[in-house]
Image 1 (cartoon, rainbow, N blue to C red):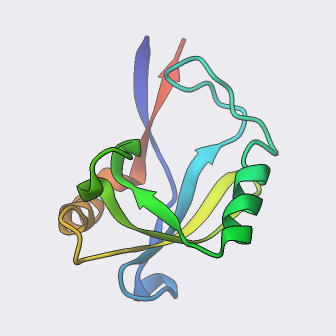
Image 2 (cartoon, one colour):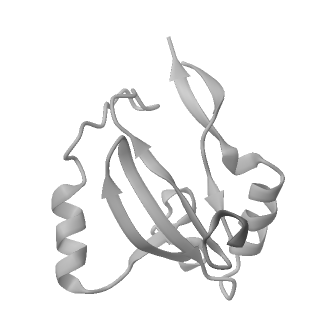
Length: 119
């Protein structure tokens, strides 16, 4: 499979009307084929978002989908909604080990690109 980099919108921090360490971005976009060949469709996150809301706990913000290593829990999802995909408003926890690196990468432009499979 070939991949390509494409611009992805990212709003971050006070310059974009958000708090320090906060950002909004799409965690997933509907209708695109991912690296496993899956296509995420509207409504895919509705049940999980409702379950998290019922629990009253914040959704963990994970770096690289890694749930097995606590160092990869880099903050919390403050809110999430479906529109063109799963749009999240999140806050980095700078007490965790990875967020300073993530912040530096986003300032360098690494987080403004996403990899998409091509045919």
